[in-house]
Length: 244
Image 1 (cartoon, rainbow, N blue to C red):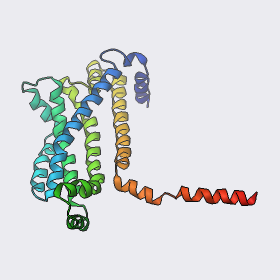
Image 2 (image 1 turned 180 degrees about the vertical axis):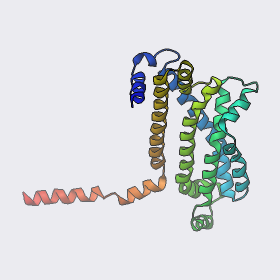
Image 3 (image 1 turned 120 degrees about the vertical axis):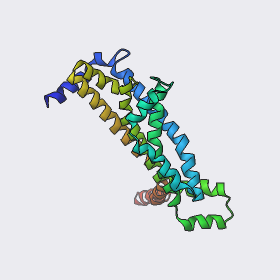
Image 4 (image 1 turned 90 degrees about the vertical axis):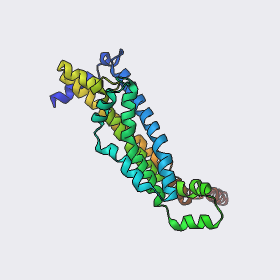
């Protein structure tokens, strides 16, 4: 318990938030590295998963290939990329995190497209929709919950795993923890771990909200269940007038 209180005391010390190695700078670095990695992972995995799910062919092979990234530890990928000309650059960390984030996004995009109601798909085809119209107008809206679930999972994993970048002197909040280990500063280690955990929980909450907010089917259900206020208001006014 004393260790936790010491960590919180270190975290709330304003001096630890200022300067080029302060918590504020490291937090911005961490968010930037994580955001770029998620964006690139989506740009790579989403088009492949959506298109293969739409075609219904080649998805299993693509998923198995992408899952190799799950089998190889991120630390090993960082070490291998460190030996390349990239060295200690930010791109070493970003590429490793992108490879880590692709599998859940690709898998959920493909599965989401394949689990769309086939009757709805056939009905759309019967209405004369082209392949692109079918993808954009029917399959994609119905697959959004699973697609966003994959992005949500990848985002939280990337935010948490980005801490490992400090092993190769990369940017982010992990530098606070490794610096604490180097100086045997237990409050700093605990304080760094606390802020990483809080950031991951905050991102999880934000992504959970976003997953619900962008679901078109959920919005449609809410509109259908919303009471018709426009019809209710005149009735109330009539009652007030008659009572007067």
